[in-house]
Image 1 (cartoon, helix red, strand yellow):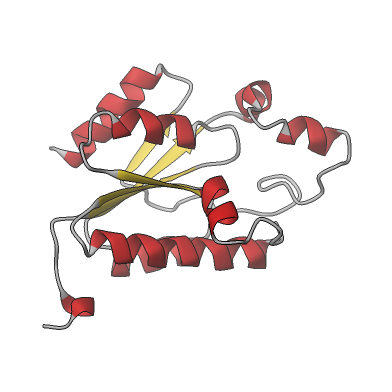
Image 2 (image 1 turned 90 degrees about the horizontal axis):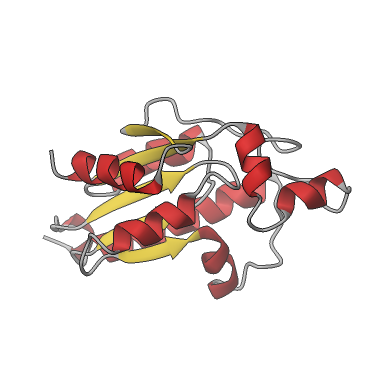
Length: 172
């Protein structure tokens, strides 16, 4: 059996949603409950992969999402639990993940635009409103919301409840 065919005990939890949905917050909270798990955060990955200057248009975002997925596959094959927190709202990326990532679970954080704009942890919505950002995912840049996520979370509920529901998904 080749390395690419090996099955491991690893799993990938792909946390997706629009900016301000709470992807990184949820992933960091889950790390406390999943010993040995690692986090691949979209913003941190852009910087680590030297893609910080990469575009935010749909084609650039999709290319990065597939890069994140391949990195997650490399790590999950080594038996790791990998949390991926990224917007990556493309049907073909989700389909690729389902086909190629062992133990794949897709978690979609569904949050109203009003709450996302209120949270705005990186100031992106304010920058968009001021005209400094023109390719905001979900506004100027179209996104494809997941068709059948393993878990759709109302991320306006308390973080502890979101964590509980993800853990329940992982350990039925």
